[in-house]
Image (cartoon, rainbow, N blue to C red):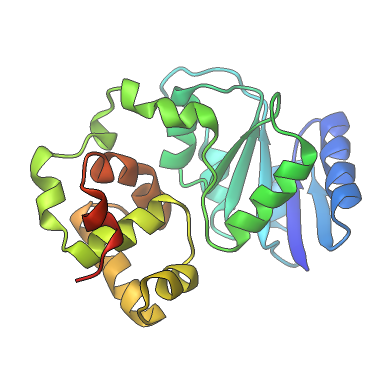
Amino acid sequence: MISVGVVDQHSFTRGCVTRSLKDFDDSLKVISFESVEDCLRSASAPDIILYHEHESNHDGTDTRLTPVRKLLEIAPVIILSAIDNPESVIDAFESGARGYIPTASTPAELMVEIIRLVQAGGTFVPPSGLRLHTITRKSLTPRKETNQQFTPRQTAVLNHLRQGKANKIIAYELAMSESTVKVHVRNIMKKMSATNRTEVAYRAQKFTDGLPSEIISNGD
């Protein structure tokens, strides 16, 4: 059973999201909170937190997603938002979120699958996030020579991270031990100056673009 915390300051949408999750998967234990502080004060931390962002302002400040950073202290966070544009997606993942769900286009049953994906160690990026190559952002622009810093095996692991796969799945598909995968992930994070797996997965599209398929899929 996965424990899901729903943080939403609006009573109506909080109730709708909570009921929808329970209706589509009765194995989910769903607890709703009116505020971030209520969630942080909860006796037991949830496995996953859905944070419903109602702010529509994209003013470039660093305070809009401060609640997400607070919630990350106790569990992975998936953001729900009516705003669906690349800038908002970038901000979400830079804040440390593991998923971004546009509420206008995401059915409830898919939301359940996204929760399970993140619980398994994956990352969910909406279609709007796939247009990031059209946006110039210094923090997401790798140096041209960076691809040359990865070994073929690290590149293979990087490609799997880009797909949001957990270490156990990567180990199985690349025929290596899970501990070896963890070593590769740590080295990749260091080379990419990333602080977590989310940053790696989010930047990986840039680093693997244009590499020959045999380099991406083959081992040492």
